Length: 181
Image (tube, rainbow, N blue to C red):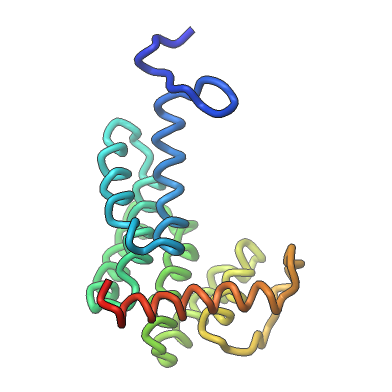
């Protein structure tokens, strides 16, 4: 039985501190998408929880949340370039589509169609083996572009409802940026 210092109460029973930390690090991506005002504090907390986990992919996930948090700001392009390089050096190129999807969100917020076209092309190339092929659909949904090559994914809701939700995140972020929040 783990010591009491290493176990936290959870809704379905005790949870190890390590699992709690991993779950918090994964949650920041969603929080950054849906609640940009809360994202800085959650990302800071995730960074505080990362030491001792020794999982490079988890750290990259938090960095992806930072891209979402900062979407629409000039610093994102440099952040993306740095992350692409780090993924290549670390041999974690399987995480590249997730970074490109965050990049697509940023470009959709800016309505930068030229950059978005290049990102969608990279996503197509990276997901050509069908892993995460729906990321291309999502990038097109966010930018309100027609799905020229559907992934064949069967959405839980209709494609139109899914498109509306992803586009709504972009519109909400633009409103958030204009309000200066």
